[in-house]
Length: 162
Image (cartoon, rainbow, N blue to C red; front, top):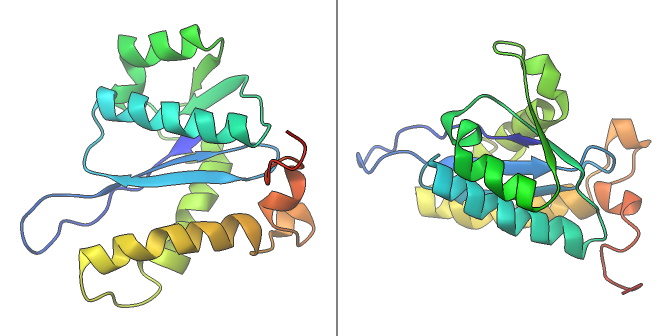
């Protein structure tokens, strides 16, 4: 499942930051990066890294659910998923509930990382992201997972069975 909240415009006028996310439906394990745009090439490169992350964790990706962003309607996006043997579905327009797990992750991301504290700079915010994501995946309990973190549902996350 992919979803991404757009960052706020930086005061320096340098543009926007985009948080690209991929969440495993079963475990809620998340892969997330802060990138500079939402272009099809960026989305495909992100997906290749996310897919490698999930594969390394022992998760087989069968299908991907995205919103209706232009980058997910591109031939480049379709071709990469087809080459990987992955089916692609898009959410219904104006129905964020369809992508509920990603939307919930986005809300948690905003509340617990992006706006949890006043950062001095955008670089400070970005540097806090990897630690927050580790906490989310390995230590933060989830109600939907009986209080366990996502890592508890991914037996090969530490690659101990490789």
